[in-house]
Length: 175
Image: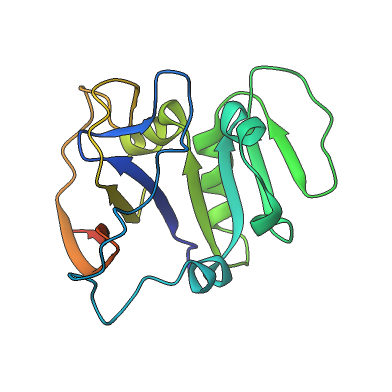
């Protein structure tokens, strides 16, 4: 069985994953629980579902990686870097590299970000599942999640939850 590639991230209502400075400290709910669903997305359960995290260099440098310290981390970069304990630095075609990982034994693969990385996977049409939190915030500018020239990908909503005004939507590709 092929390992799934799952894009899981948060974006503002207007489609940004980071502000103009690359920051993401604005990510969170609105503090109101009146519309919370009884079923909630479990990030802990999600982390148990994956054993590999794929991210761009900037995301790697800007993120606290404590939550994925036991996972294999693959970082795409144009810089030459030595691999670290559980971190592999990849130059070149990251999409082909991850496609080869899909054929190996293991759990699913988390496509963490950033924008250029996720768009390369979207253009290749190989993202199997999309988990997107819609942050109740309009940024107005920043780093967009989706490029304007992305291919059309029909999706099917599989589940949703709301926690403090932040809906989390899980989609799979329609067949």
